[in-house]
Amino acid sequence: MPHGVHRTERLRLVPIGARHAPELRELHQDGGIARWYPLSEEEALRFAERMERSWRDHGLGKWLAYEESTGALVGRGGPSWAVVEGAERAEIGWAFRRAVWGRGYATEIGRFGLDYAFSVVGVEEVVSFTEVHNARSRAVMERLGMRHVGRILRPGFIEGSDVVREAAPFALYRIVRPAHNGP
Ligand SMILES: CC(C)(COP(=O)(O)OP(=O)(O)OC[C@H]1O[C@@H](n2cnc3c(N)ncnc32)[C@H](O)[C@@H]1OP(=O)(O)O)[C@@H](O)C(=O)NCCC(=O)NCCS
Image (cartoon, rainbow, N blue to C red; front, side):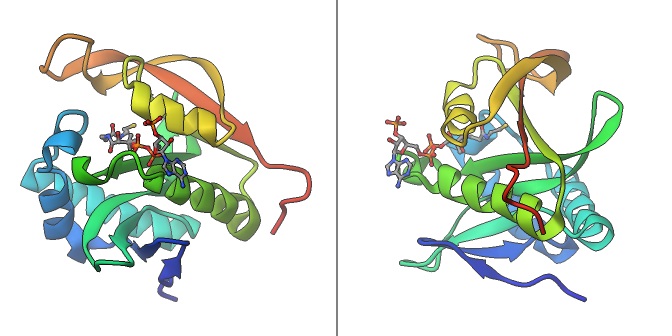
């Protein structure tokens, strides 16, 4: 069964599938996003295909986020299934165009995504990670009530460099399902 479109206060959320690769690629060419998360055409296709599998096999995945007031594609985010430290876990993330930072859109998709993972899918925990110096993304994690639980090494950036390294330090955050929030 295809997964549906959802609405938050200000965003329309569309589950990402393989057909969204061109939109995803275009979104990731935004300067504010590319600085942290560059995606080539090939990587955008693999990301979109991975999201389609995440939706199909686990009932959760990331959404493209369209601004209700303008209809424009402004970002993407939500929880999906990922291998983190050798284990499959629900992992939540967000990326929005530079022009809309500072409005709370990432927190809005994050809050909706956590609730969806806990109360619709019924996962026990959700993790999130970002380069240790990505202060804006860490602030979103903290606003969502996630707890900093450690440091992991993944491909990404080291502070002061714009070259992707194989093993950059990432801050790992975690939140467990609230007692009242079962499916
Ligand atoms: C990470 C990222 C999504 C954070 O965006 P952001 O705009 O800082 O985060 P939010 O959407 O939650 O907005 C929070 C800001 O909006 C303000 N705000 C306004 N209205 C708000 C509302 N209704 N709810 C929450 N915050 C609101 C907050 O006060 C905060 O402002 P501040 O930055 O001055 O403290 C953005 O920086 C980004 O896309 N970065 C590039 C991609 C990336 O790094 N992704 C993470 C990879 S792991």
